Every structure is written in C-alpha cells, then in structure tokens.
Length: 475
Image (cartoon, rainbow, N blue to C red; front, side, top):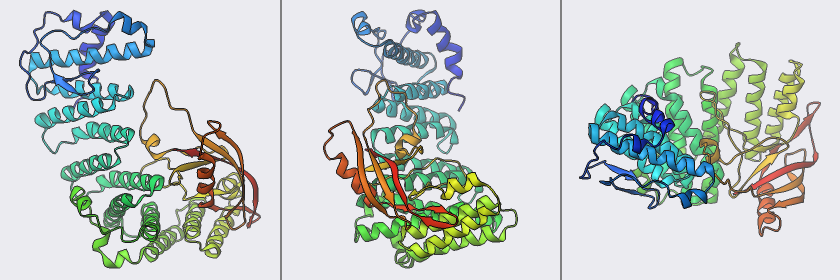
C-alpha cells in the first residue's frame, strides 16, 4: 500500500486550499447505483449508507455558528474526504487502490474526532479494498488492522482488539513464516499488551489474555533460542515476562477457581493460541515455571561478560519484585541487596536512587527489551501514581486521540507509610477529585491495601518510608 497521504497530497489538499472540494469537481459525474464497498460514512447516522446521487450537503450556517471552529473544520475535512472517495469511485471504480488510502485516512480522521464506529467501518473497507488489490496475505493491511485495534480499545471492545491483534500475527506468519525472527517484535508487543490489559482488569473472563501472553512468550523464547542460542542476552526480557505471566496465571487460578472450564468459545475465537489448560504439567506449576524463568534470566546476566552492572542490578531487582509478589520477602530482600551491592561498585548514585531509593508499586513495568513500551501498574478498578511518576491506563498508552472535550480526571490523593518489608501501613486521604465523589476513597484505599511494594533501601538495608504521596486514578 502507498503512503496514506499520497493521493490526498496530490488531489485533496489543493482543493481544500482553493475552496470546497465538491464545488471544484461539480462536473464529475457520480455513480447512480450503489455497489459493494461503495458506501460513505454518514455523520448523522453513525454508519454507512449508499452513496447519494446528488452532491453531499454542506454544513449549514446555523450549525457551524453553534460549534467550535475546530469542530466545524474537522466536519468539513471529513465531508471533503467522503466526497473525494465518492468521486474516485466514479472515476476509477470501487476497487481502485487509491480508495484504500483515502478511506484509511478518513478512518484516522474519524478516530481523532471520536466518531469511533464510523472509523471502524472505514478501516474495514480500506482493508477490503487493499486485499482485493494486494492479496489476502499482504502486510500492507497492517495500518488498517492497527487502526482497528486502537479504535476497538477506545470503544472498550477489548476482545475485538485482541482478535485484530491475532489477525495481524496471522499476516506476519503468512509473510515471514511461523519461526522467523522478524515476528519477534510483534509477539512481544502482543504479550505486553495482554499482560497490561489483564493487570488493569483481572476479571475471571480475562483469563484468555494470560493464555495468549503465555503462548506469545513461549513462541518468542523458542524462536530466539533457535536464532541465537538459549543463553543469548536477548532471552532475558522474554524470560522475565514469561515469569510475570506465570505469576498472573497463579493468582488468577487462586482468585477464580475452575476458570478454565468455560473457554471453549474463546479457544475457537483465538484458534492460533495453544491453551494452557491443555498442558496439565504447566497448569499445576505456575510458580515453579516462573521461578525457573527468573533463574535462567539471572544466569544469563551473570555469565555474559558484556552485561553492564546496571543491567545486572536491574535483573536482580526484577527477581526481587517477582519474589515479593509471592510474599517471599526474605529471598526478595536478598535479591534487592545483590542489586544494591552491584550498583555500589559503579558509584552511580542516581541509578541507586532510581532503583532502590524510594518505594515502588508492584508489579513493575513490563519491558522485554525487544520493543520499547512504557508500562503501567494498575489495580482492578484504579491505578496509582507515586511521586512524580506517571502511570497510565493501558488503553491510553496504546492510542493517541485528539478529542474535543477530554474527560476530567478522577483520582484520590493519599499519603501512605511503607514498611521495610514493602507493606502499606498508615493510609491517610489527602483529597478526592472530583470533590465529594461517592465511593472513591474506599476504592482507592482498597487498591493500596491490596498492593505490594518494593521497599526503599538505605546503605544496603530496607528501611520504612513515611508519608509517600500516592495518586490513585479511578477508572
């Protein structure tokens, strides 16, 4: 697929500058009979309708006067896109390659204006035209699939976003092969996304997120080991994420007994995924599998002479975090102290402070090192920010959308004492936003009570922290 702006730059933008695109092309005949794929995206109905025989109606003066200038401009741009699409169909037919680019650009514009159902329809049609021209297996469909993923997330249709991710993985496998290292970044992205979504929600029905993440990391580890060997440094991030997946599987099984009993429909929907429940050994040994993955990660870091002290210390800290999540406080403190000892030899006070100088909420960010991605630490119904560190909803992280009126942030500011064992103690409410919101304080307190922390260290020893400012975001 060409760049989405190729046709727009040559045709659409000059017409926007000179005036109405429709008026400039009034002599171009329009198609009279709707064909498959010849719909436009109506701003009033929110769905596709047959292309009209007559020109598109312009924005009424009274309507424009009552709307902000940015909204009026956006509405006119969308109308111009729709007109350009209709005219292109009339000139070149419903499957002209340029239509895929124009319709994709329309979808992005609709998405930015929060017209999300229409955006989905535009992305779907753009992909349909693309497949007609470039073939079913063409990776040129990736921008459309990613547009659909982002928009499904904005709509809260998480399972639809997951299904689109699986379609994207299917395309990569068809293009490169199932064991090609070029699919590693996507496997890692999929694994990280599913862990974030589960971390933010953690409901019984969210088990499939863990299953898909587990399968993605198993595949990524196998491909990396085959490509570079089982002791290669690139294994370490994947091993840690595999260990974190094991932790989530362990806690999910304890919280939601027999949660594998009703996964038949999901296994049909995500047919590319091997289900954890099909492996009796794995399904009963989450902790041991996670511990082995952590041990392998540390072994690689300790044996590779090219590993920096900072990376080695970070590996010890991650292991400590993982052990802390399982309430193995003693072994966790030992791992943190190994990290502290390694960092002391570097004389890097800033890094010591960043890793061990203040309490950190667990689980910590997930980053395999294959593909940079800021992570989050969120509880079931709230997320927390510590000091100046900003922690986001996972859906916010994956989508950049320009909305006209962003929702006001809802949060509770707390002051929390953290013990030397990483346990929250005294919790004091400082403020609630919006003021007087019912139930926010209790939800925020429960979030912190149920949370584990990496304790602060001073001279290599864990020490308590008083009055840590915590901002708990209410979702």
